[in-house]
Image (tube, rainbow, N blue to C red; front, side, top):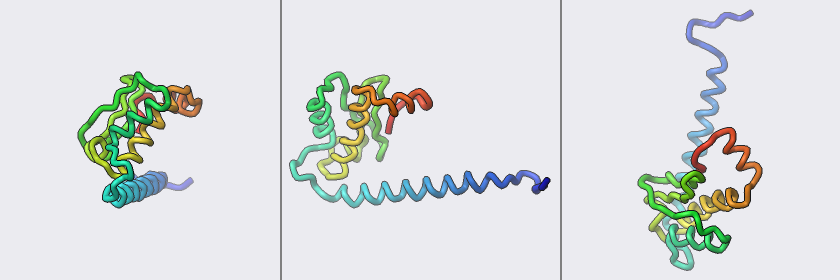
Length: 130
């Protein structure tokens, strides 16, 4: 049996690896968003307009599109039936803004169609979807 110095556990390396992977993923998302935030979308819609259109085209009329403060704090809240779009998405006309809005509407569509993996995820980790 191995003994380690006080307060050291080799499983800390697994936690450290998880933190590093999360930081890399977050940096990639932010850099990709910044790149496409500079590109105006072809039809000139804002993120909020695109979200509302997507919801309506899928027959979802009981989900509100609302503005929340922050950067990339966008999420769908199934409890309050809201797609919440951040400052960087709600009123922007970029490819990135419309893409993030469409992603969050995808969660609303999954909720409306009772998508089984989403129901499983909500059972494990209840709350908002990002």
